[in-house]
Image 1 (cartoon, rainbow, N blue to C red):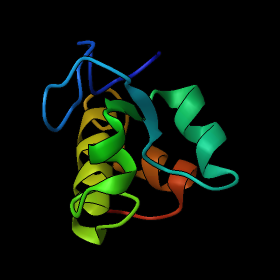
Image 2 (image 1 turned 180 degrees about the vertical axis):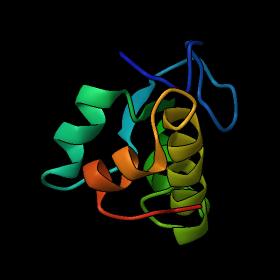
Image 3 (image 1 turned 30 degrees about the vertical axis):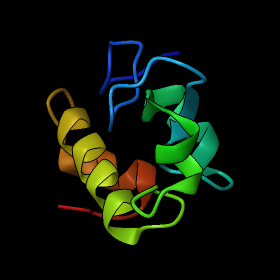
Length: 92
C-alpha cells in the first residue's frame, strides 16, 4: 500500500496488526482514485475502519481529522493551491 501518511503495518488508530483494511481518505468517485494515486490512505482494523463509533465512515470528526492530516502531509512537498486543485477543497 502506498501511503504518504503511514509507513507501519498496523491500524493507524489502535495499533492492531490483524485483518487490516485500506482506508481511502478521500473516498467515492473520483476520490478513491485520487487517494490511490497520491497515497491518501491509512491502514485500519475493521473496528476502527467501519464498525466503531469513531470509524471515519461513521464519525465525521475522524473523517475530517484524516483529511487534515493528508493535506498537511501533501503540502510538505506541494502547495495548497495544488491540493485544492486536486481535491477541490481546503481542510485546514
